[in-house]
Structure formats: C-alpha cells, structure tokens
Length: 81
Image (cartoon, rainbow, N blue to C red; front, side):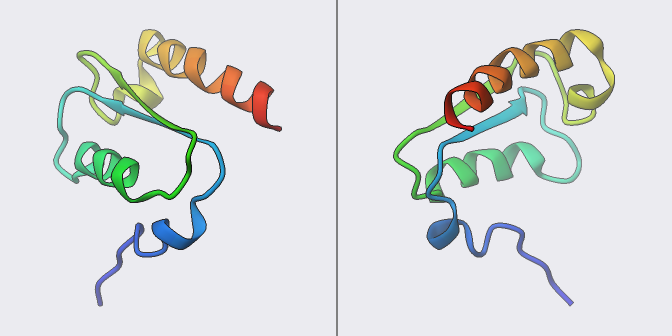
C-alpha cells in the first residue's frame, strides 16, 4: 500500500506556509518533499528556508539547527495566528 503525504497539498494548503529543510539530503526524501511542497501548495504566502549543512534529523536533534529553524517559525506563528 502506498502513501503520498502531499496528495492534497494543492486544495488544502492555502494558508501561510513556512517550510524548513536541511541542505543535506537524507535517505527518505524529506528534502525533495520540501521542494515539492513549495511548488504544490496554493498559498500565496509561502517560504522555504534551508538550514545549511543540516540533514532532516539535525533539524530535531542539533541545537544550532533547531535554533535556526525556530528563528523562522516563530515570526510566522506570531504574524498569522
């Protein structure tokens, strides 16, 4: 059974969107999915932030990478919630 997490991106993702990915591709395609999400989401306010030198897992486990990601996410939440 297959699963496509992005199959409803076009009709559902219309709200402001901040995507954060690492510059190092991992084994499961999360970096590729970030670029796909950016192109498929219908939001007129969307942004992609790439954390240089980070992998997907670094965005969870490496404090410097998490800090960079949060520096982008915090303002998006403040401005849109």
